[in-house]
Length: 455
Ligand code: GLC
Image (cartoon, rainbow, N blue to C red; front, side, top):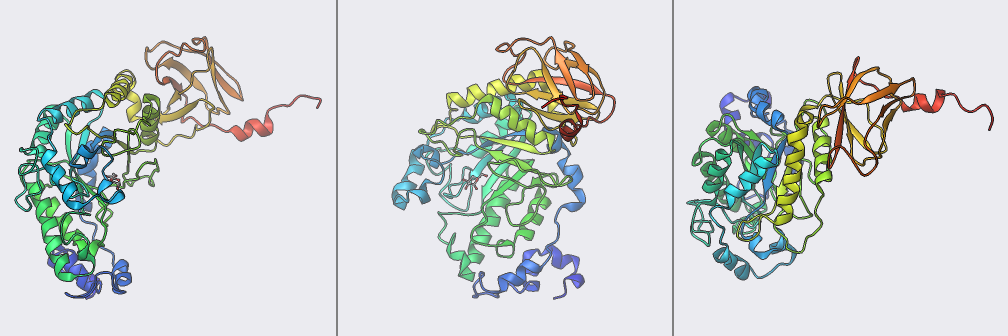
């Protein structure tokens, strides 16, 4: 089929139609057959492009969200990949679903903490790789109502998030270690059809039964490609049911935003991106994991995402009963307090040409330069190679003016508290109003700053 001649209806039929055009094997043939290469060449329609800017506006302003990994794996306390990494017997693992006993009030605690931390949206694992559905699905008994919890955890979550005025996100793992066709679908067309019907059916429930949903966050598309998942059709269905929703890029389509994981990697300007990260080293609760990030690292990461126009989705892994580990509460509370004092930083997302310092990072909004001092050197701080005239400087926390001098080689902010007495914690932000867009040129210092007359 000539893609150019595809009708709108064929487009709407999604990957089923695209699959034919792409030479995806007919029923009974392997999805992973050589035809896969041909499938890759087909430009899939950019579903949702027309309304993207409008749908994404709140998310761009939000910047900071909470990821929550919570499911039957939480009861095992060995991270969410345990079923594969340690390969316990299936029956033993599945029996855990009966002992999974979340406290009903837990989602309210998560949402309150997210709000307190300065986060504006939340994304909960409705189904992770182990296949357990945290909601009242009609498509499998391996779900929260029929197993240990005895109630619809997703509903409690949705209500809790809304009660705090935050936006509601659903994470959904396409990969499924529980469904009998979850792996077989790669090599058996009948299995693929059953599994895709199941998958689309679960997503349809999530998009139908809980009112307005703001984010759909797919994960791990193994073992199928976009044609195999019928991802175009999947997204068409989601946008059809939830016209305002935004969708990530992990069902093998670009979607509305990219999702660098455990690293901060900006996309080109114009393409939305969100860096997701753990607060220690684990997504799902891991009792032994004590490698917590400090509030300073979290704030730094948030600033780094924001300055390159991205979002930061920071994870919490609640304990088996849904309660929040004490370290998590402590760290996020400190982060929220900092944001409360330094809120305007969260919107400083213009490209910043001042980048170098031994103890600070920088971000910019218009002609305003934000200097974020991570480790407080004491007495004065200076920016070498500053090319732009600074008009005024102040501490963001208090608004107190900061004295400064400026010459061709540096701007030096003086009269500041001594070492050990940083004006703010974990980071002190100084605001410099500049005459024009601030620019730094350290090479100019190296090449042209007059040197001593003798060696
Ligand atoms: C990875 C992990 C998964 C986690 C996800 C979050 O895909 O496999 O467990 O949910 O990252 O982005």
